[in-house]
Length: 100
Image 1 (cartoon, rainbow, N blue to C red):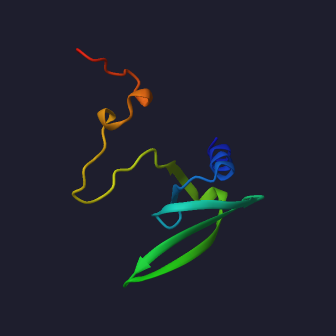
Image 2: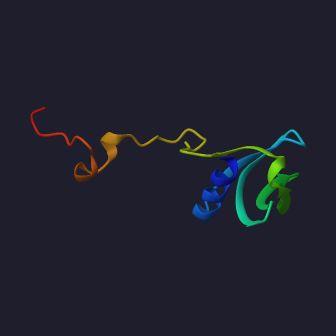
């Protein structure tokens, strides 16, 4: 089942988080860029000491304990968070009518 989910996320090209059982660690904000046999290729970026680096790891399928996808995110900071009332009326699910 997990191998089908990994293949689906690979085809969608979405950002994923992968838990590696043998290393007991998560790889976050990664992309699955290839699958060949029982080898999964994962690409991700890390920031260490104000330096960004890009990594590719070749991982055996049986080493992957879990994979998840981010459904939504909220930006950090003190900015105004848009809500449904800020959408144009034509895009609202239940548009407001005058006099409501």
